[in-house]
Image (cartoon, rainbow, N blue to C red; front, top):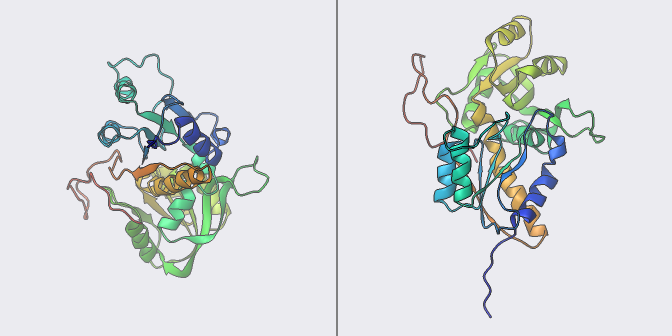
Length: 296
């Protein structure tokens, strides 16, 4: 008798993901884990993306994905309704009606070893051994934590390293920004995927030469560079977290293989950065940035 490979159940897939990105590692304010989906349904195709936005849900449904794994939560803040009269409600209804499960790994993936910042470091050429910028005090191994610190071999001029960062990450309308002397020698680098200006003091205390992160605000950055802090490289939030998707997909396939199961995975290349255009700067670009380049 011929049998049809229906793939592992969602429950089995979640066991692998939660083993790799334990929900207990998430920050107290975070909302991670399964958002919608039947744990007993089979999973054949998994789509990985940074943001659970309408364009990504379109992609998940059109590709027949059984599971959408995103880094950012859909329901980070409490809601009182998921009616279709609300944006989040419409997305949830579409996912449920199409039998597409949604799972989120956010700060638990940030702090994992390896996690989001390890993938960022690899994408921009920061080499190991890597150590946490802000270690998790509950981790006895000292390996988990937010951000990573590594080295450039050989050292680079800041201007050259900034160009290397731009080349290693997918393109966005805003590109990257740099603060510091372009000729400054960069040997030791801290990185933190996503918003990272809360770790400016940690980067200074660790004595790194440059700090690569996203969403740096004017006043903290100005004060930081004014008083001889490390050079700063500010990237688009989405771009700094996108390299993790391929790593997470590999981890899922490997974990399922160890259990005798397989799934197909796909990484979304839709640019979901909030800033779609940059206008007025000397290098401004106003072209359609929907599809990112693949830095792998």
